[in-house]
Image (cartoon, rainbow, N blue to C red; front, top):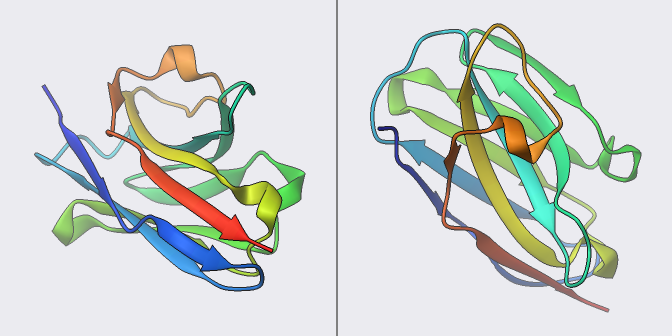
Length: 124
């Protein structure tokens, strides 16, 4: 059972940056996909992007393209979400998630493992 532990949330002013980290409790196969989601109050959980441990990334939300970057450090079993030029509308709880398979997915239902969530609040 893979456990995911997130860190790095907090409060930041608009235009600022934050980096979230997600550490996996064990090494997984290179086809294991890690994703970042976020959920704002009264909104559905949306996928920001996903990445396989073998590399490559896909971003799904137009509103974060050019501002958010997903990266990984395989040796540390860690996936990062670097968030720049933050806006108040980025305020949400951010989750990392994992799934085993040959491809990533934008659907939360396809992920078996979830981090505890990290609150990100962007003030105007």
